[in-house]
Image 1 (cartoon, one colour):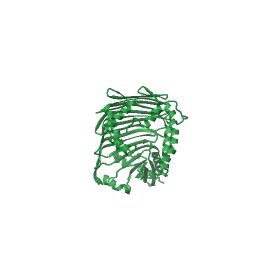
Image 2 (tube, rainbow, N blue to C red):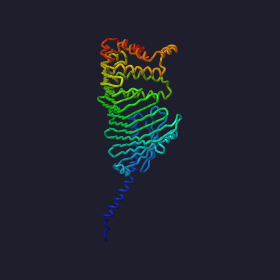
Image 3 (cartoon, rainbow, N blue to C red):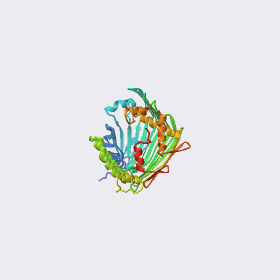
Image 4 (cartoon, rainbow, N blue to C red):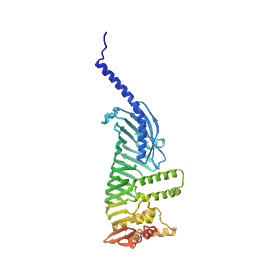
Length: 482
């Protein structure tokens, strides 16, 4: 009797068949887990952003699933929808051409689902291209890498006012998220964008944004961010605004339930109303904000929005929420401090410099939301200086804005009388009013202001004043821009 022997070739063949079976069945098994994980991912996106994400359709398949994701943006009446193909792992060879490992849990490929109301405008701008496509790769360690792309544009079309020209080099956004550590980082790059119409022209160059951080212990996103802009130039014909080499850096941390943040804004030059300014520097820090109270404020805002959507008159809804907000304020700011050091702006007309140090003392969670009590808790030191020509120009702009908005009060006769006064005279009267009330003093063409408040005692330029009397006087409009 002979015994059949299994050759090495047969063993290899059976192993190969087994591997094929495993590879074929694994996507099916992963498909069920991916479906539940996808729902969790969408829920997490809603939690870490101000947007509302919802799955409105999910069709699970063997090797891939199809989904439609809806995003609701605050104050936008129409949802934004995305069509997504979710490719099941454990192997997706399409990643090899991107220089990435093909061993993944899933790959999500998505694009904007264009609604009929958006179709005409989007076709004008993007022709046959989808205006937003993206890919998200989820690996076995829980790392998520996403890339979003808005294609380049070079087009023109007609609107009711004439020809509109749009040119863009396209936008790329990268994002990375770790489910293990909760850390998130990303960046956005827009190298060039131009739009020109009969009403205005806008030109932007070298815009980049980056962020790295994580969700804090109270569910508030904290971390570091940088926004930089080589150029932004907006010209409406009557007015022009431009800024060059703008950099905004922000750092936020959470310690023992308190949120601390620091921001620094720098610009080499900006142009407004045909006046050049720059360089400009603003360094501001806000520390000691109670995270739990901050979340309560956000909950109140959500409740207010819901009541407004239900048809409650805005005046009634605001009145209902004001008392709730005032009850939170003491605990929110009891350990707060605000520092500005420095605020510095150079210009063709002169220079503006300021620094501020503000803290609160003697406030706890039982402190009544009484303005008088809170006023006595303020420790404030403010130093301010501005050259005469620059001050006159700033007041001039404010007066022009009031005139354009028709904000003058009183009868038609008093409005006509007010309008007949030359602008230069109004500027001089406003400055003289601030000098008369000791808000400012003048020294060799520079206007100075030094304000200090400690233990309820207020001094303005070394002169003691009653804080409530000064507040009521300011609310009454004395010495204010008119």
